Length: 388
Image (cartoon, rainbow, N blue to C red; front, side, top):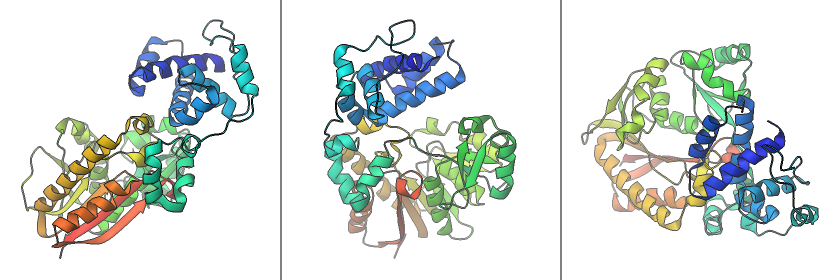
């Protein structure tokens, strides 16, 4: 596919997204229907689409609208030019109109702060409250794609061993200082899932900040303790904790989310008990990676940024309060409870911990950490609490 043909595909996908379909669903449908597109073409179209969604507000200003065509025009204009190869011939967009050519020749338009940072206006003050002087730098970084990270499975190997093994498969990786288990994949990241290191369970895809808070939590788990990952989801943190030698059980309110966990654990060579029910007071360590806005990982799921609303934030904070209270009841008297989110917002992090402490005065915070994209990975928050 030519660059213009890739842009034509991206235009169609973005128009279907604007009609209400999910990005992943539309990309999957397009890939199945476009047998002529090779793997590099599919990757390039995906990258174009996700860049347009991340930069939706600024691209709309540059392009003069919110259609897929306007967004592709806006991305080209943001780079200082106009799209090339738009001839209207097979698999290419219709040629630029006189108005579109004039728009491309115009000076760079003035933008509001929210437009420039590709952030919903209502969220700007909330990010400002959470990030302070780092707000603009953080939101600017989140306009681009996130790095790819892998977690080295210490139950089977080491960072030093895995790096050259990946290099043998033309995958470039380097250790990342945020977590001693972390590798940043800087060359051929899409090969990782088919690599021998991945298939043999030596590495697992996991963001570096997620790895860092898993390690932080593990350091506070009492020796020999049983650990409950209460909101396990796909089980990334449960796997990370089990790889450190901890005895881990996983639970999720939607058990279907954990359906791949047994096979992932088998590949990793670790044992994790998958639970559909829990019992109060039996766990010496409980980790609640609570449902949240995901604002710390919006580089990876950018459509969520534009779908998020104040009403959804209120709904989530209520759910988070309930989870904290439920996990407190599940924690043994001398145990520890970890509360984690992949959110950057105070409303979902510090405010929830403070609300819990106000209603549970017999608890206190023994550790707290906030990580953001400027630290290298996604945004994450962790508080570890213990009864006084």
